[in-house]
Image (cartoon, rainbow, N blue to C red; front, side):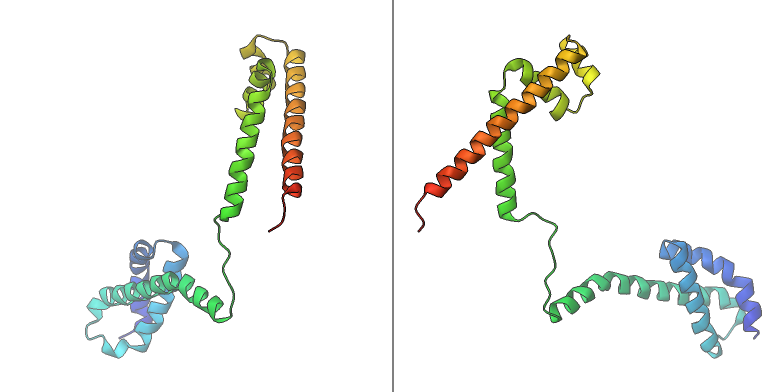
Length: 180
């Protein structure tokens, strides 16, 4: 049997099959090369050259399956290697403390927004919370652009003052608490 002739005759058809099995071009190319090498090494096991394409495709599917298994196990292997080295993996989730602080800040901000005069609150909510542009805010509220900018500036300034008062007041109270 002339391996080179058989490989050249069937490699394109097998490659198309491997594209479907592997899911991408790069893996299919790698798998085809490895399958051809295995087929060449074990050519003596092929009894009929008419079945070469099916035989090569079967070898390729096995190689592809092994590749996918390795890829699936890679994160587990990396994790066990890190654990063996005594390293911990950083979590993408917020810590419970961070989540509590974020919720407290959100609550403080909402309380501060509620304290704004209605004209400033409307502009602030439309512009900074809903993200509308200045012209749209002015149009919705039937005010001029300078009036919108003025209300937004006053609203932000008053919000900052209110939050500063809340936060510095909380810090003073915490400093006055007796330590356990």
